[in-house]
Length: 117
Image 1 (cartoon, rainbow, N blue to C red):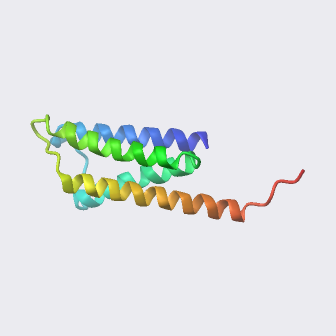
Image 2: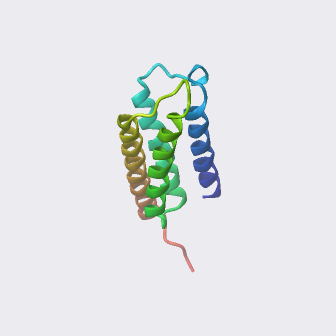
Image 3: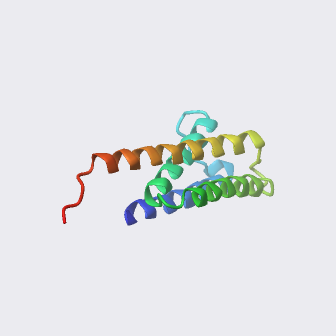
């Protein structure tokens, strides 16, 4: 689980870097920016939920706080803009990612053989 936790923190840092970098340095996938935001926050929410299953409310607060902070910080950037709709997409993606992580973690526990001892 340490690897998953490390990936979660690295992905959150990468999201912050890409979000706050000048618009010309922002990578694009060819999909709409809303889909990119949704998937990015969904992935980070999923990874955090798998890595820290007993801290789900803390994860939700972290993701909401990160989304709010990143949108607010874009307001002070010359080439970026923070918008409420973008915040909503990020929060929704993160929330569904956390829910997906919970489901996967629980299914994994059900399918894993019980420890012998």
